[in-house]
Image 1 (cartoon, rainbow, N blue to C red):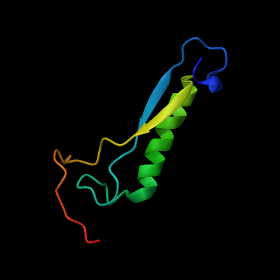
Image 2 (cartoon, one colour):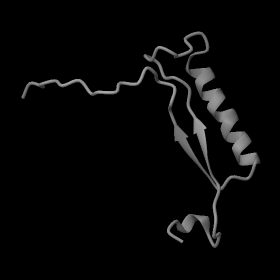
Image 3 (cartoon, rainbow, N blue to C red):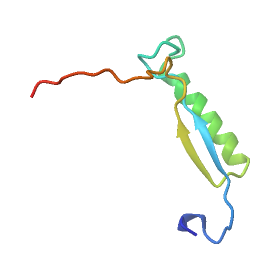
Length: 77
């Protein structure tokens, strides 16, 4: 298998833990702050581990609105 850390398994379950909106993004929960952000993702991780997943990836889909086109800028040398 490509990933030796899965051992002899022929199939692996890889889950996704979604991180909430980060500071500076419009959907960031200022009242909850970083403590709530961390507590929420830790709760997801604990549930995924209890469910027996083999690996966990982390994603952040909550920093919206997405920029669909990168701004063109000329940076000074």
